[in-house]
Length: 581
Image 1: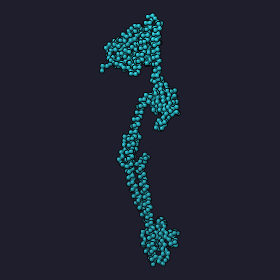
Image 2: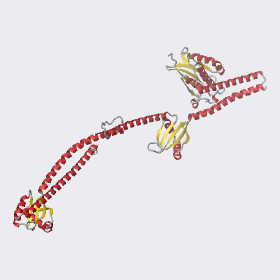
Image 3: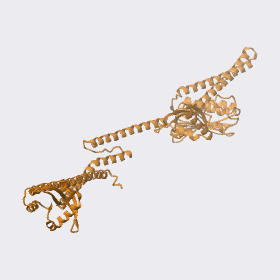
Image 4: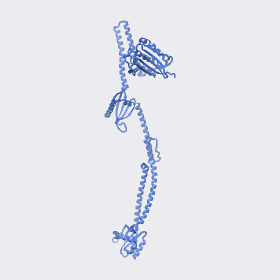
């Protein structure tokens, strides 16, 4: 069945059918024409013979001699009956006898003498148990005496049939030979014509599989050759278009995935057909309530066919979701939505930090300014007159001025960090120099607060550290100041230095009140302050640890904190190890 569906077989059978039909029609036409031709010739021959016999009878004085002479003129299987004629002459010929019987029974032939009209017929008579076909002509004539006679000339059609049969056989044999030749020719012709079509089929299958590099090799200059060139050009153009589409898709996917915003494509069936990482993460973080709100926004956008804006708070993250209607989002020309998701957590955090910054700065500035104003007014107004009291008030004013100066400096440092970052100038110096300076700097304060200092420098006296001396002094100062405020009399504050194969490590540890776990993750944020009830002395600005972290990160290092309430806190600083390269 598969072979019958082949173009070669179909074309071959079509050509054979056409040739066969033409040969059959031509053979039938030839046989019919030849039969008609021989029949006409036979009829004309009978007419000619009848005229000759009639002329002989009309001119002959002896009728019987004329009849005998007429029979001698006939050729082949012809016979003649001239009426009136002697019955005994006719009875000697069974064929004439049967023919005469047929003539007497046929009105047209029997009345020729009366009507004096020529009649010719195809007759069939039974002779010797066999049926024979004859062509019979009734021809009226006159004898010498003017008496009417009828000449009946007949001819056996068997010779014509035999001739027709022979000719038909010859025509049929010729037709079969031509059919065989046509079959062979048609097969090779169909194969030659369809060979390029088979190549087209193979190329089309390759194109369907996504392979466009193969070419149809047809060298002819006819329509098939032009079709091959067009097909090859089409394959080339398809490959170029697919390459362009692939490049565009890769660029689009790369752009979408590298976007800071989340992107979703939603079709009319509410199916997600496009998404990037941020959008996928938001969808995973949604709970049931968020999904209901999200679906509601989708439905509202489809109904309004405009842009809908919503804000979501998911797992302490803030998202702004903008949905826009689009008429056609896929190749099926169905509508859909394009969704842009922006993570607003940082903006919300920065907004909150801005509010906290204003509140913290206002609070930090109000306290020293109020104290400065109050003590100064007391001295100016003469409320305090004793020299000792005035000296005490001036010391307080000086202390608050220093506090105010420190706050301003820290604010300037933070502003500079936000604007330009921290500039550090690293140099190779022993860390023991900085630790010894810190021990000298805090010796008196430790005695006043009844604290024990353990600033170790054993084993690192000559080791070279790559750091900015002034900046690292600022770091240790902030850490030791914090430790002194969160310790009690008799507690220990220690600084230890050690090395690994890749890092140089500083550890600032105290045995003070410690930090609660909920505060540990935020102690390095700007303006963040731990519970003031656990602190000794005046409250800080909340910027010291933030600046400390920024300085350490500028050294390409890391700072970590661990603490346990009631047992103390440990700050660990890791700096990249110094190399001489």
